[in-house]
Length: 81
Image (tube, rainbow, N blue to C red; front, side, top):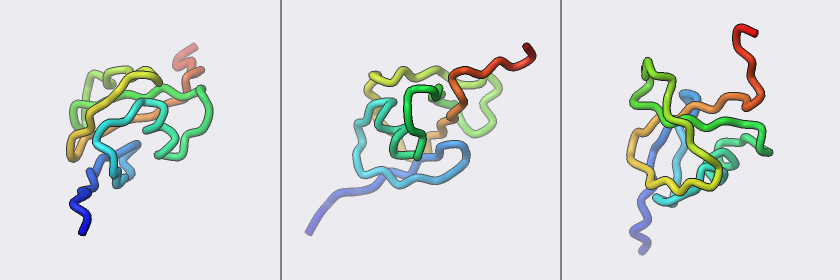
């Protein structure tokens, strides 16, 4: 009998079940369906984070916590340009 417990996180408001507690930013992007290196991954302090989130680099190792929220944006965005 396995004691593996999935962790529920949210990426762009979509719930993901993750089996691994420790994961890199690149692995999380791939798991969420974002291919390539043209994406920015942001860790939010809750769904309505007014700061816009903390940028997570692709090689950064994350220890996921239940219910965490992430946002993925195009890395080449030019808002207001």
